[in-house]
Image (cartoon, rainbow, N blue to C red; front, side, top):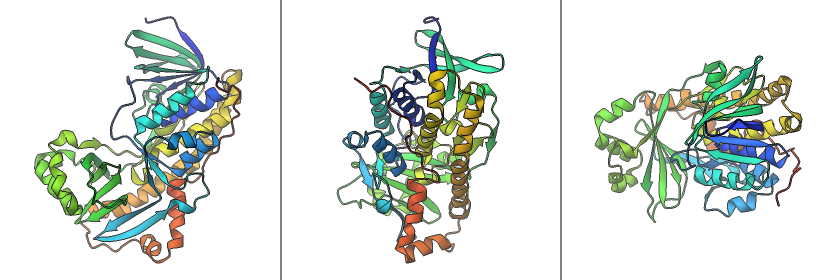
Length: 410
């Protein structure tokens, strides 16, 4: 074993957006926190890179927004879709009651590095990289800590509370035996990069044409593209070959044809298996799951990391004071789930509607399907674009930082 058992008031499994934000908020509030991240660094491509106005507002409330926006990023004040060659505006974020009235596009590793750097200023915060949680420590029907593997050998961490923030394939929720409700998704996504040329339009948008769907995010010197395929359809796409994939993308975005040679093979098209699920119960005595570990979201709307961060804020608001005293009672863990259940279910329900009424029909070949009534109304009355802007940008129940800064950094 690498060393004797470690001890902390809160052990967070997973150094993603939910885990890092929760670690920052708790350490700021005087709670001793240890975050265990299984990877050696944050450098993994094609993760969610959209930081929505709800998250920008949290950073503002923490006094960190200016420092965050000083890092390289792109701003998206409006979004829309091109359907059959016609551009249709969908959401206008510029009138939201938030400090940042746009979506900020920033590589997630930069965002996580930013959170880790600011959390590290507090003496109660520890981040252990390359530490993969593999099991739970239990006694008398309560979770008391975790077991993890590190390059120096296995370790044990004793904790007043274990938080599973280790993503949609959460080890913590699996080891805890928490029941998962699989809602289902009819799509998967291929992520890829294509170079951006000086003459390209700057609009960040989705495109629907010829029975295909492509999302293009302007990342400055390249396009981050998501090509939507039918659920489980990747093997069929591979059999057709990379040339067929290039032709399919060109059918949606003809102006990209001159750079599709950058897709050399399928190593340049990363598969994201889309899942929509949620836990029926997010907690056990001594344990709580948040973020994707509690509810995996579809990429529709790009809301996943922002919903996870809202979970972290609510968790800190409800549990920080109790954590300073020891192990929170399960009624408080139940309160976190109650607080976050409505926005989770409402968001997933909206994603399912979009998938079934729009995306599924397009992929099934309904190329001349009538535009949904909501889209036609958005085109006719621009003021209505504030509604999807609020749902995408702020969510159904935006959280605000209520925890005090008990231990300011030096």
